[in-house]
Amino acid sequence: MARVQFEHVYKRFGKVEVVHDISFDIKDQEFMVLVGPSGCGKSTCLRMVAGLEEPSEGEIWIGDKMVNGVDPKDRDIAMVFQNYALYPHMTVFDNMAFGLKLRHFPKAEIKKRVEDAAASLGLEALLKRKPKELSGGQRQRVALGRAIVREAKVFLMDEPLSNLDAKLRVETRANIIKLHQRIKTTVIYVTHDQVEAMTMGDRIAVLNGGLIQQLGAPQELYDHPANLFVAGFIGTPSMNFFKNAKVVNNDGETKIALDGIGQVIVPEKYVEKARAVAGKGNLTFGIRPVHLEDATLVRADGVARSSIEATVDVVENLGNELQVYFMTGGQNAVATLDPRSRVSVGNKVQLYVDSDHIHLFDEDDGGNAIF
Ligand SMILES: Nc1ncnc2c1ncn2[C@@H]1O[C@H](COP(=O)(O)OP(=O)(O)OP(=O)(O)O)[C@@H](O)[C@H]1O
Ligand SMILES: [Mg+2]
Image 1 (cartoon, rainbow, N blue to C red):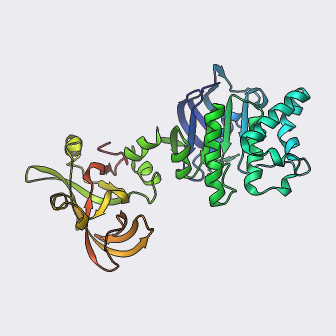
Image 2: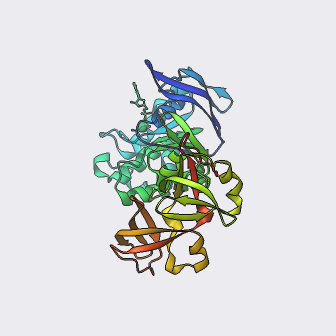
Image 3: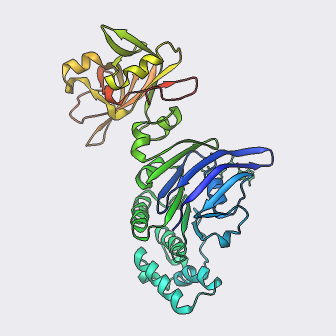
């Protein structure tokens, strides 16, 4: 059992600094996801916990031990990589047992641990096979098994699902979640996939350019993204952004006016914060596709106070919802509409904006002004 802490960690390769002053605290047994685009420093952070890279500055703690300078094998961690690199000439059993044999565990203990891990991963029937006789998903499970048998304090996983096809990815994702519920170790999981991050993480750290943009529970990041980057990164389809938004006072109500698009009422809870940035020139309005609706399906008074005008480009019917791509004020945007909507391509429609879920960003620093 162990918490993991980063204290003002920097990493430089030569003169290039790729991780800038990262501090966070992963609780014992927590499933923490590091997510962000390619090159943002996710693997570097993980490799510093593993001891495969040393921080240039700052401290990393595992449990109550500062591990800077500690050899990887003395850190009580187990790591699963994207390329799971099983030994091709060894059976599944031997692949899983290998690390324990190296550490001179007694034979009976090795057998017990491998069989327990195989049972929890559904690999009992495959223990005698070689990796080439396994599917991609089975190989990935062996790689997980190899890590589990170590019974390490901290599990590190670097994009462990990215070699699997879409269906297997979803299955294995669920397997890892179940596994964590059972073995309750601290997990640090790296991915560039925000869906994986949202579905797996107790908490998520969103990284960009070697900086933590926001750290919080999945729902927190979705509902209250701290800045434009997080807002655009978390959620599919991505949040729509409209530049040149203005906070205005209209008939005693605070509204956001969107040039050539429409206006949106600011709910009471955000009025004070919206007014505080009213004088700013560079505001960007944000609304998620699911928070737009075909105005003909919404009560008229709501529509009058908050709606935008759109020209429909493409309608994708997914059965349970319509994904509608539209143009408004010269910009492309997306709305997820009720399947009862009758909007059709080329038509001008009114889209109701659910103002409880609006976002307003200050372009100067990208921060969410009504966070
Ligand atoms: N050994 C190294 N020497 C020099 N630069 C490196 C080294 N390792 C990583 N980098 C650089 O550090 C930055 C962060 O790399 P890192 O591998 O941590 O990114 P990542 O977030 O894991 O990306 P990906 O999603 O593509 O795996 C990148 O710009 C990368 O080029
Ligand atoms: Mg990486």
